[in-house]
Each structure stands twice: as structure tokens, then as C-alpha cells.
Length: 273
Image 1 (cartoon, rainbow, N blue to C red):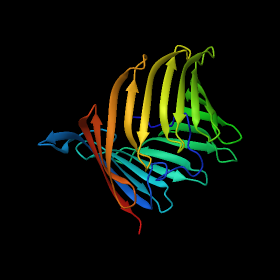
Image 2: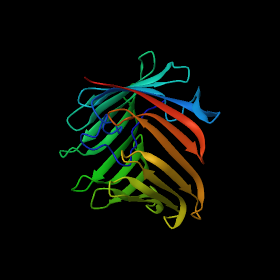
Image 3: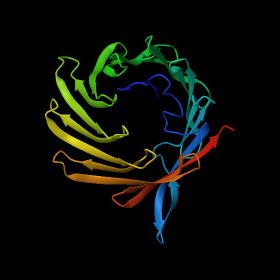
Image 4: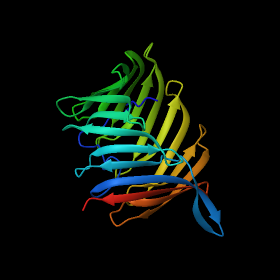
């Protein structure tokens, strides 16, 4: 079990913690659980627990920085824990632990003098390099290039383009041996910078492989996700219904797959006074 950091778009300054997790208010902790949805007598209820989008507990400090992330098995026993250390730019280090508190692996983050992430390296418990990701940025702080390594061997290289609002509208992946183009992701956004469409082109970015489209509610949460094949035919539709607390954070989410209820996710949220 190894926990690393391979992000095409790294964390920017002050984007760690509750804000990055899409939470409003001074959140102290969030406990999330997933259940299969059952429909009986016209009512949708929770069935057995399953993995879903993860069963976990996240804890934040009063500044919104993530401190701990505990992931649980279906029997509610602890699977692993993540501990986060911060600096002025964001994450300084993250450490992953087994339930007996023995170290699994850890990640060291580096930043430039503008606060942009330039490297995240994952090490074993004995501080042997496992993998790392490095990034380059333009003068606006947008990530223009990402390179991923296994140990010190380059395994993945990508470049990105942005619109005037800083939205990543195109990401290209290249063959690390000869530099040839492998595939391209093209993305569209609405006026609120919500991602509304993403198209994946393979064979050198020439042919459409698949496409997804999203719709959002007024709080910025996804309410519809549609998937299309290479011929632009609709394959699948996922719809999501939410129940919100007084702070505008959802506490229950019901997922429908082609109009059939499939998953219920609950969140117990505790706030600082």
C-alpha cells in the first residue's frame, strides 16, 4: 500500500482543506458513509454499506486546513490514516499510517517563491523515493506542464492550456520515449467556472473516444452527469439529489443511474462554535 501525489493540476496556495473539499463555514469534521439504495413501496432507503465514494472521517483546524483523514473498511474498522502538515503555501508533508500507527509512506511538497506547487515526492517509511510529480507554471500560476516519475524514471508527461479565467481547457499527454502526442482532453466551463463538458481524444488527439457533460445546482454541486461514446451516443445518465444543512453543505446525496436509485451517501458535519 503506497500513497502518492500524482496530480495533473496541483494544489495552489491556500486551496487545501475544507475549501478544496467544497465545504462552507468553519467545518471541524466530516464523517462520510456510503450505502446501496433500496426502493420499497415508492420510498428510497439505505441498504447495506458499500465502498462508494469512500467511508471516511476528515478533521480540519479552525483555519480550514485538513489535519487528519481516516479511511474505514465496511466493518467500520480503520483501514489507514493520513496526517497533514502545512506551511504558508499549503501542504508541507503528508504521512500515511497503518491502524497500528506504523508508517506506510509519506509525501514531501515543494513550492516556488510565488507559492506554486513545483514537486510532490512520495517516499517509503525508510525515505526511499517511490515516485514524484513535478510541475511548471506560467506567470499567472497556471500549470503548463506536469511530469510523473517512478523513482527517477519519467513515465508520464502532459501539458495544459487555459482560458482567460484560469480554467484548464486542454490537457495533452505525450509519449515519454519519442515525444509524440498520445491523447487530448478538451474541457468547457460555464460562467461560474463549473466544468460542463470534457471530451477525450485518443490516437494522437485525432479521434473522439468518449465525452462527459455535467449540470449543477445553485450551490455548485453536480446534479446530472451524462456519458457519451465515440459516436456521441448517450451511454449513461447519472442524476444526484441533495439534502443541505443550514450552512449550505449537503448531508445526504442520492444517486440515480438511468433513473434507478443506486447509492446513498450521508455526511455528518460538525462545526466550530
